[in-house]
Length: 170
View 1: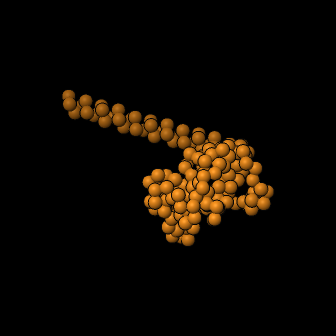
View 2: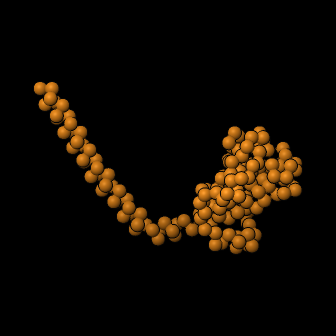
C-alpha cells in the first residue's frame, strides 16, 4: 500500500500486538477501526511524559477546522476518498476515515494523542461523575415527572377519544 500523505510505501508493524500499516517516511499509520479500539483499550504502551504534558490542558473541541476539511486523501487500501472527522466528536484529533472500507488514517503522533486523551478521560470520569451526581439525579427526577405527567395527559386524551367514539356509535 502507498501512503496517502507522501506516497511512501506502508509497511506492516505491530503496535501493542495489533497490526498497523506505517509509513517510514512521514510516520502516518493506517488501520481498521477495530484495531484502533483495541489499541486504545489495551493500555500496554507507556507514552512519553512530554507528549502527555503537551495534551494536559487539552479542552474539548467540537467540529472540524476549515483547513482540515479541505484535506483530500485517498484510502491506501481501496483508493476511495477519505473523510476527515474529529475523533470522539470533540477530541481535537482529526483522523481520516474511508467511507468505503472504513479504514482509518492517522498522521504522525495522532495515535499517541488519542491514547493519551482516552486514558486521561477514562481516569477522570469517575470523579467527574461523582461531582455531578446530584445534578444527574435531579435531572432524572425532573424527566421522570415530566414523562409521567405527559403520559397521564395522553392516557386521558386517549380514553376520552375512545369514550366519545363509543357514544357517537350508540
